[in-house]
Image 1 (cartoon, one colour):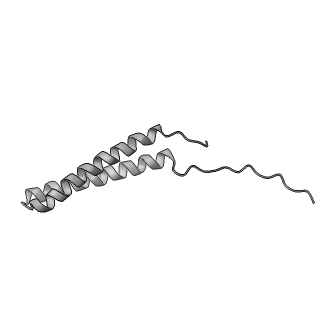
Image 2 (cartoon, rainbow, N blue to C red; image 1 turned 30 degrees about the vertical axis):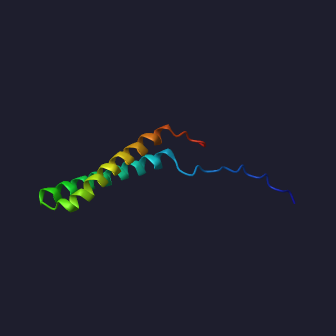
Amino acid sequence: MDNPEPSPTRRRASASPEGIIGIGITLAAVGILFLLLGWAQWMRVEHQVAIVFLPLGGLLVAVGGLIATLGHSRKRRWE
């Protein structure tokens, strides 16, 4: 019996650049929602709740934007 030729093994990248960009955009969108929720709570004079949501939303927008921009710089290993 002939042994079949082994097929070349392709390793997949752990995270594609598109996936990283998508995660960044999702985090930024959740951050925008938190900012809007914090602003709405501030307008309702619920300042203690707004003080939690506003910085958390700003942080998520900044981190999400950073992740989305860094996703472009990641090179694909396998085409």
